[in-house]
Length: 235
Image 1 (cartoon, helix red, strand yellow):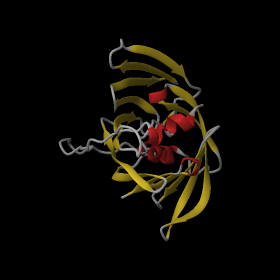
Image 2 (tube, one colour):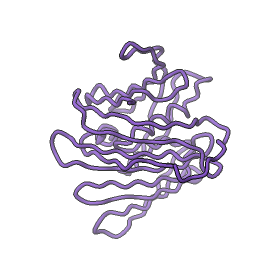
Image 3 (cartoon, rainbow, N blue to C red):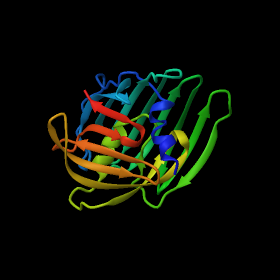
């Protein structure tokens, strides 16, 4: 799977920001499961230089969960771009639906519905007719890891079975690339950054390695992609 261009289209194609806000919604009771409520902002760096920010929120919604984020990136070279993604989830972290919009030279987007291990994708490209494609997976517990939306790694860190431990494999979908594949997730033990100690997770595909640093509640604090010189740091 072309995770390098996809997951790290991360920085180079990159995308946008509108503040995520649930202020007008009635507070809802969290569904029992692996997810926890979280809200924050990430600073995105490329080779030590700030190239963007992402705002996100993970909250209970309609008996399940809504994980929503928006990134705004201005790379050193190339035009700025924006992306938003809204992911509805079951209590165990399995996706129900996903909607993304990316704005650069053109505005593109897609809506995806997940059921029985199948992702039904309706792609809407500016200036073209909608295109539909189905992708099949061997499990309904699919990790959605889209370009430039790092909050989705916070969801991945929650669906990893910490009580089981060891290396675990998840089917993965990179929606903006229409790319299916798999990732392996494994604990790395304690890791230190900025004088603080965190729990580490390593996420690997055939061509990419990502390191996640998590607090003692397994909230994502920092993400590193050494091969691409990318750092994503919670503010």
